[in-house]
Image: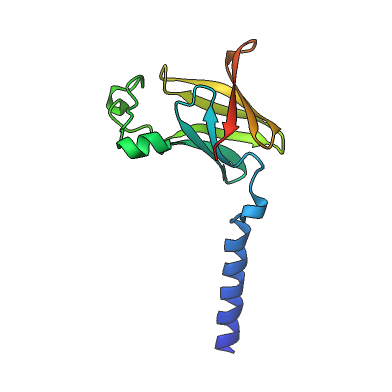
Length: 146
């Protein structure tokens, strides 16, 4: 009797844990590593809960040179010495499978955060649009990194 209750509890817990995980097959079609047109960095886009997020990753060249790129334009002086690698630059995008909106884009080049949208043009092309406010927006194209 005690073993049956314990087994039922473990099964229920395992079921709850499985509900909160995603398998690679469940991943967003935009998930993966992307390079901007300027190829000044790599962004890894990933599912964060029910949303889409992205973080800075080192390029092969940066890894080879052991370059530490700092967040020098951040408006918070306490954050200016932090590395840009690994910080979330894309947060809170919802939607899919081709268009995600409602998120924010942190742009280290100017230290500002913009409202944005992500559009998957095809499996190897992504259009990222950041807006100060509509219609003051700028779009860039990212290509899937190999």
